[in-house]
Image (cartoon, rainbow, N blue to C red; front, side):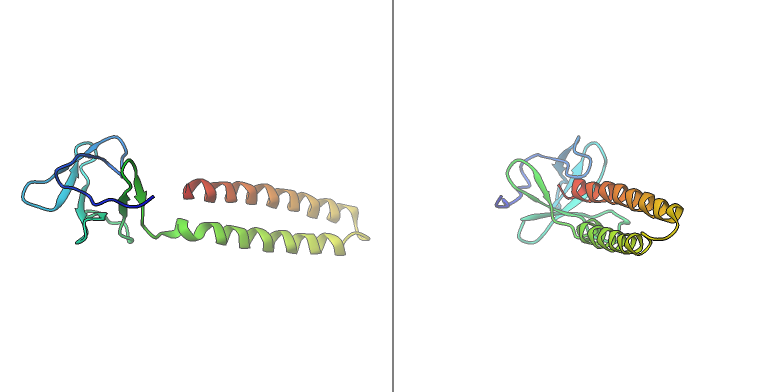
Amino acid sequence: MKPEKIDLQNAYPCPRCKRGQLQAIVLTEAFGCDRCSQIFGLTEDNLMLEQLSTSYPYKKAWQWTGNVWKDQSRSLSDNYLPLALVFVLVSLLVISVLLVFQHNRDPGVVALLAALLLVTFLLSTVSIWLALRNRI
């Protein structure tokens, strides 16, 4: 969706708490939320809203699409899915190779490696699900 210019005269839902309403702060180019008390400023082109009062190392920013805010911030969650996929593939590859080379050995070791492979697969599935859930 194409971003729209943010108008100081309009009321918008709060992109942070999602329950409050943003209201323009008099004599400034900023908005304040009536619920969570967060303060947001506008960029020079009035296309992006930035959270001003934060201890978060990355600046949070949103664009208005006409009916919802679209998050424009860069954070660890942007890189989480590729990192999770690499971890999953490497873990499954190592355990599978160990399992193949142990097939003529002690059945207890083979069972342990098979259980480790299953647990790794389940944990990686949950990890990827969490990564995808955070991206949507």
